[in-house]
Length: 269
Ligand code: NAI
Ligand code: 15L
Image (cartoon, rainbow, N blue to C red; front, side):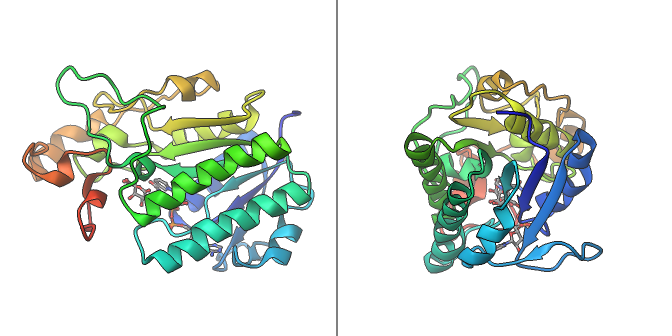
């Protein structure tokens, strides 16, 4: 596949979309933006719902690749998750297939495997082939997205890199995040690698920086050419002073998914 140049960024008005709008053009991409909400200062952004198949078909026409961030990004009632994340992602894949788009980078989440116990002591890092253990309907929708990606590769030759993102924010804000944080700059590095690596078929990778307190294995992400440059450790002393170390008796500190595993999930995490 020739290196993509024109990339559709769905969810462009969101937190991660906003960070990527700033960072990805430096890699030479021309971004076409799409979101349910208008974006200030971006009059050309496409305002469309993932439920609108005609709008999606038009939005994907002529792009070389798609970064799919749009959807509900936290736990929500199943019906809402169904519409935005499950049907919406299906609609996007159908449109991409119909218009001949070669590659999608799918924003999956650590919550697809959120009930995986976090490593303690000398435990090995969580491998990329750990069994699915969604911690929410939200996490379940990410499992669906990953399986949808596999289907469209096997049946139609549409490639995807599913990035199980940890926590991509300007700074880590919790002790848990020290282990799963992905700096925005590393996020852009990983998306760039996912867009340009050869023959990815459908590859699932963990998405985080090279944190000292890392919980999961980054080998598959690195195999795409991803070379993370950041580490959450400079934030550790302050966060631990404020919040304390993770408590082994607290269920929300026991699993990869943090507070998403509690019922109902507790915010903030
Ligand atoms: P966000 O909630 O800030 O942004 C999501 C965007 O999607 C919003 O701008 C929203 O308007 C748009 N959207 C929602 N439903 C839509 C629909 N039906 N049609 C069109 N647009 C719709 O979320 P954030 O943090 O930017 O995350 C982006 C993606 O990355 C999400 O898919 C999220 O699940 C995933 N992710 C993010 C992580 C993070 O640390 N930020 C961690 C793991 C996964
Ligand atoms: C996610 O999947 C969410 O979209 C994001 O808002 C964070 O909560 C992140 O996971 C996390 O686990 O920190």
